[in-house]
Length: 132
Figure 1 (cartoon, helix red, strand yellow):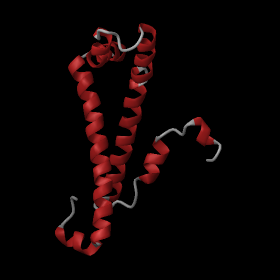
Figure 2 (cartoon, rainbow, N blue to C red):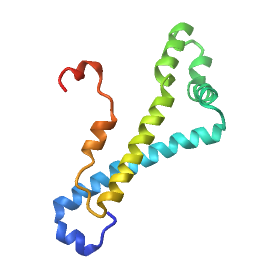
Figure 3 (spheres, helix red, strand yellow):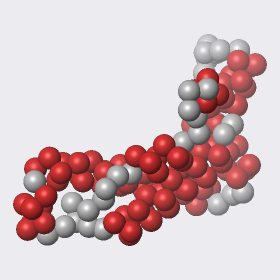
């Protein structure tokens, strides 16, 4: 936690723990976005080429496996299922991170909540939209 010892004592043990958890959520999101940015930077490629290179790097072993782990059609479907939405995932997490940083700036040193940001940033699956 990035607050003084006096503030930590005033907040109490449970609140310090809650603040630490929110800080870890933000730190984890920052690290995840940084990892995605690093892959893009290392590849130095437009998104489509980056996706193709990522597929080659991470599933090349599946394509080269002897005996085959799955048929070529199944493997193509698997690649599309796993890597087909990487751009959308990156954009979603980048927007989430910016919103979390904004909240930190607004409420520093004590965050009230980040749950609303997370709930608003993550699209609901179609089967849950009925309930909300």
